[in-house]
Length: 564
Image 1 (cartoon, rainbow, N blue to C red):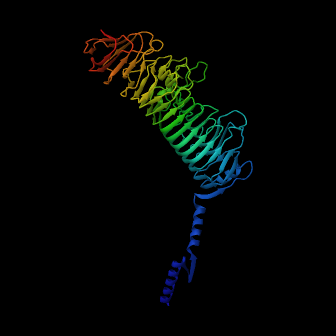
Image 2: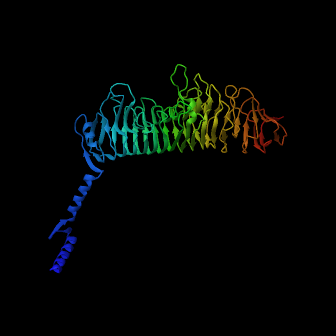
Image 3: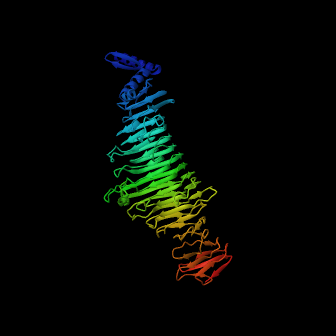
């Protein structure tokens, strides 16, 4: 009997396998069940308990979809699909942890006209593991009720971790397109591990993207354009609120910034390092690769110190600038058609934080055609020092490698590069201009550069005007071409072989005044055994090369000249 039951059970199992059934024994009974039904049942069981269960959200057809959306999102832990249609947003949409929000094509959030100074169409606070896909958000920039405030943001991240935003658009918000920072008044609760890919922020009133306090941010293949209406009016604005915040591990790849009201990129760091000597050390780490800006007043601008607003006109935090460390690196970036400076390094001091431009291209700046000394330069390292308190810091901490600078104005740029500390006349420190590829303009160092500075011109493209409208001091020992063009009186250049590079140096007389080249005491020109060469006629030129630390070879001399 047992053998017969065994054979029967075996036949049933084989039958079930071929015809899509499973067979199980419960007591003396054999139970047949379809495999696909069992699978569906298991999947439903998993879905009911899985943190990524899917919910579909539809427009309500009313003037306020916010309440319905927040009720459906309140527990997080799932994927939420927003069906095609218009969602009218009155209150902030609160996003919870472990959520995925995905918009179908044609789904759009539109902010209802608001009189609030501050709002967040999507608000992420103290949450983690959130993904936002294919979002389309429109703010109330053009139908806002009232004129006050500047903090009506499209997407706000405060104290978040592991957030992804991809394939999305944020347009026309009263404040920023996207804001990433810390929980207010709790800077240690910064945002971390944020990824933004293929995002467009356009026509927002304040900034396209504001980065306030983040450790770990990667932004790629995105655009931040047409930010106009409320300062800073930048495509990307790095703007910490105080010295409890962080800008660490930030990387930007393949970014476009067009027609922003004032700045393409703004490094507004004057609040990051506090106002006291004992303020915490802040290590900044920002890398930008293939970032292209176009239009606006400035392509790339920095601000390291600012006013308190006190009656005395003192600076807020110069005493603590030394607490700012790290490096900002820009690789293969470009700016063009800026109304003022392509690069404005405003109050950028050599205090510990360095900024480096590698293979930077600057095209057609200074559309303003103004006459102000700073605004009419393509690159400005500048301190007006309009404070009542003398500044002990030195401009600097800047390096340019393989720079290309081209302008197309009929009237040449007044200066391609200017380094100027107007009041204190402190020499700049650690300013390096290395192997410029092309520069069609002149360079002016309105104060002496410190010995830590270098201008290395192996490509022999620089042209320096020694005197423009009165005596100007230069430390130009690393140039390869010198001219007295524009001089109103004879110009004397004193050479010190102990500081010069080993490349050839050419001096050209382009005026009707003598151009005098003298050796430092104890040095001489070979083979003339003289210490002075005077180019007495227009068009005369001499080419020299350092032999050693005490003598020079005259490799070529042309025109009218005198040896002494």
